Length: 256
Image (cartoon, rainbow, N blue to C red; front, side, top):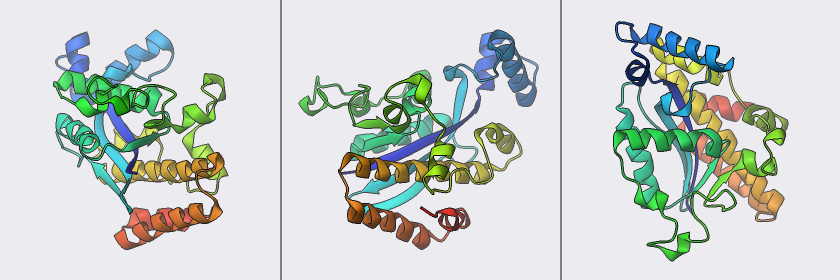
């Protein structure tokens, strides 16, 4: 079984905002501020509609065969269309089980809109059984199928009133949770040129998500305690072998 636990980080799409709202003449920072101000006036929140989120990084904690790795698509100035295309190409190639935290509510719809805008193609991801019967009763889009498991949605019993933040659940389970950053910091870090901090933050999130998925598999009876500990050891070994400062930070904070 191949597995991709994934997460995206985004910033306001100022180019799209200019087209929609006539913000020509404003630099990127001021255009973003104008978009957020209009959204606050409209809804009381500056959380933009999903099509106006420009993807700057996609991180994946991947089990491919028996090898675990964590990696990111996007290096600061990368073309958005290219990094989204690479993500869907990975799905085309490995046909993984996707794991997310609120992926159905945010990450995947953002990727759908942005892929549509860029004219991309992702036939395997959109397969629902017309060409491959195996996808008829288990595809990436049915809420109750597990080819994509949105852990937040499943654990909340598909009730919006019962959802909880990744950081809180991870921390309660003895996992590192968020380490020094939050989603609210992403835009400012990107504007300041600190893209590595954003990438590291996103990789921490996918590691938390993957490890929660292992606990969920134990909860479902798919793994016993020995299996769970073995899979956690696989992750630890891979992170230690990678020998990167933010991954060592994650290991040091991992108590559960």
